Image 1 (cartoon, rainbow over the protein chains, first blue to last red):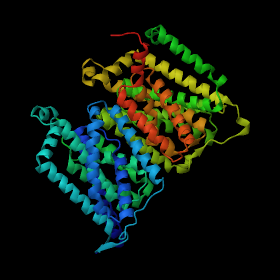
Image 2 (tube, one colour; image 1 turned 90 degrees about the vertical axis):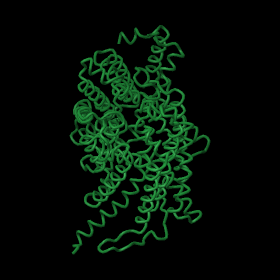
Image 3 (spheres, each protein chain N blue to C red; image 1 turned 180 degrees about the vertical axis):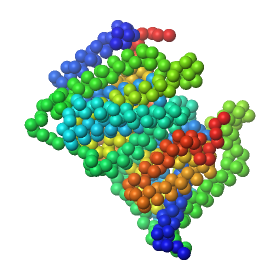
Image 4 (cartoon, each protein chain N blue to C red; image 1 turned 135 degrees about the horizontal axis):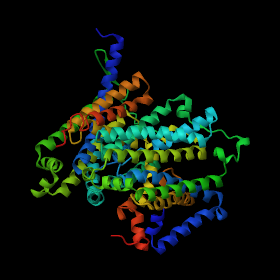
Length: 293
Length: 333
């Protein structure tokens, strides 16, 4: 029923989907920050790298599985994000993009080089005990770590969707994104909500980074690449659309996997950028984004 | 030029004249190292000014200017290495190629109404796309890099940009001075006023009858062409080109830090920014070396912190603040 060629293709696509879920979770964090606070978080990927190293250290020092370490790391990242927005970034909200850009690029430089000083430039593999286990489902051979990470990412996403849909704080944050003046008029504490949103955004990236360490080695130089990746996904998915960020994450995951398999791994991100340009030109509001009024 | 001079009060004129004079005679007293740092500063003044025209005046945020540096450098270097065509001739195709890319990006961006951060990401996407592409083009050495060979018999052939450090210093000085003059001229031209109108309010500018698309496209063309000339300078000054170095997003960022820290949309902002940031980087290198902190990244951490401090204290740039403090600008309503 499955020719060998077809099963290879299927394997590549499934792997792309699983990786894409992690990308999606990371982009979800940016989508919240970019969509609600309207802040261009150019340090997003660098935060992901810091989370990767945090998970790596927790695993090496205490044997804590990244799937569990994800929870405390996300919590710490939430606090950091909340404080950062309150103390530093809030005065830059609403300022021109290039001024925000310098502040966050400065932050990104500090983060990635602090990691570089502590851990050095070499790749650090986590070496999980079950790193080479896999499931066989029909013709598919799926890495256990990827399945675990993807399921965890989905769980975090579900929690997030629930938060934005059903809690009053979540609804208030969506109100800020929809109509800032209206939100302020009805008496929402916009500054606090922004800080919460930034915290949530960083918690997402913290969780995503922890999970990422199970499938990729931690390297400081990943920072800028992840920042670009997250922006690409958010724009392809559509600003302010959480489902869009997930879908675009999957799309990028699959396109990277296919391009790496068909052409050359080093050329995989070319297709993401081509996709980005195509979306910007043909559907600027993103795949699932609402058309601007 | 006359308007630039006339806009300054007496004190401003004296400061500018003194600075120019100092830069002209600097090689007399400077060591080779200081001269190389000054050359680097002037190079950043030049490319920063090119970016400033597009962002500071026309309001179009490009985060992919490394693309034009890289294209300018690669085209001129490839022509020289493969066909023996010298840079004075090679600069024309180099500029043409970069301007073509600029036109493509500008056309896509402005035709389809891609603005702000979205436009910035479009420029990044093009730069990264080209970087990865050049990694795979064997003709220019791929990821292994392209090198302009050292040839004994060519030494001192300044007309082929094979000069000494001193020659490159004065070349960078000429480029930087020309860029400042061009910016001052453009800022006072019809086109410059159109740019500022677009930057402030595009809808209002269109209502006034400005051909917004055309004016923005001109900004990209001028900026990309200027930057490509900077790329030619880079190629023949450093003699080695790697896609991962030239087209990297880090390069685009490095290039725009100066004008933003100095103050976008001002004639002297990029100059002040380059004279702050490049020496700062050099000082940090020597300080960290002196303190025995030779961890890679120590310098960059301080650099990042300084950057955040500056933008936090003077968000619109150092130059507007400085000229007010020193009373250099003529009071204008």
